[in-house]
Length: 457
Length: 129
Image 1 (tube, chains in turn cyan, red):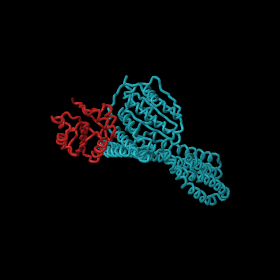
Image 2 (cartoon, one colour):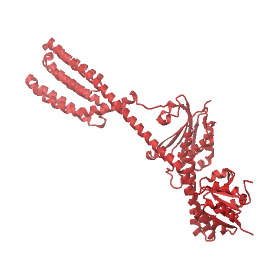
Image 3 (tube, one colour):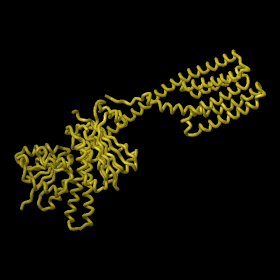
Image 4 (cartoon, one colour):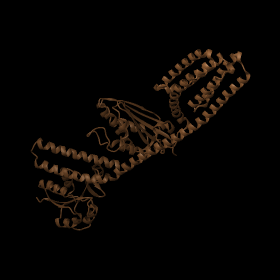
């Protein structure tokens, strides 16, 4: 059974909200200056229709424009999008409320300034064409403000004008609600489709890279025997030559014997590398039995115990007491644990801490470290045994983290290892139908997590 | 005392040359080299060695086939044969006590003192007997 990571509606909500906020910010940056210009330009109407109120309304308009300008400045900040809808509705409310105030001061229900409120509604609909509920709430609240302004101006109350003004305001509101509901839905579907395609592409690319990687490793394996034979023959010749010279110059002292010893040591070193390569490439027959993972861990620790003491490393062991057994090859698993422990020790040249933990989980509890391909090995009903080995060492960079399982990759220098330990470890764990996962941070340490299947009781 | 006769059969000329030099340097051995596997039986019957060092992978014939020919000839059937191989790890050979498939094995690269030790241990033995 394959567990795939298709984006759900919940997965899309947060990135969609982020996208919408970005769009609204950029729209506001465009619309606010236009709104200020238009709002100030319409002050000529004040002087034409209500010349007695011209100066007062101009002051109101200037004040409102200043407030809108300050909102514009706020949109320029990086954290603007967190509060963008507040800026939008606060600015729009100030605009339409100022018109409501002008209506209250002048002709009330006979005032044509309600058309300005319609324009504000349309502006809000354009700015937020994604969420209809917020638009509806705003529009109805502003209609209420407008009606209060008319109703309090009882001297000019006209029922017909009152009816028509509300009719247009409600019509505009309905239009905005329908538009933003439809537009919002379309926009979300388009976003979800694109996100799905992007995710599918990313998964495809990742699968392709894995395939290429596996092909390369397979090629290494296929050529291992040939490489071993072709390289060991010249090594044998070199060694025989050195042996001959050693015997010929037996009493020559360190002047000659030292370089000869260096040559011999490096022949042996090359031979060890070839041996490790053959170990990596040949199929490893496993001797599978139900084994207690805690016993394997304790034995691995015991085998390197004296080495730990020398390196000033404190060990904390937290093993679950009734952990299920795993179906495994005890020698191979020991090899894996020892290799990881040795890596941990080598990452702490001045001492440090190592934490060893074991526990059991179900697959949904560890889904964050199981990718799509590895998840195919696990049945959702299965219990999994998790082993963690964590250190406080120098850590691995993100760039190197991608390569740690590659054969011959090492950060330990020429004499620190061949770089096949983790490659072999991963082979072994994969053969156990498990997986091995590494997290690391430079300067903080590394955590290796091994996931194995519990043996059936 | 007569020197022990060693026949080394390997396609690598440099390797057989140096083995010859190293063994003869001890004064204990007389060594004959052969770089063409197909001539092995003929050379063995002519030279009558006390022990044969035989490469496994040769371009003209497999060491296994050579060994078969040697063992099935009345003149060479009792000569101990030690296989020299670059394709197997020392540890794998050690696990089997130096004998795999009924034959002696040494892994390359090998130091001359280890080779001499192995020769001396097995020069009068034949695992097939």
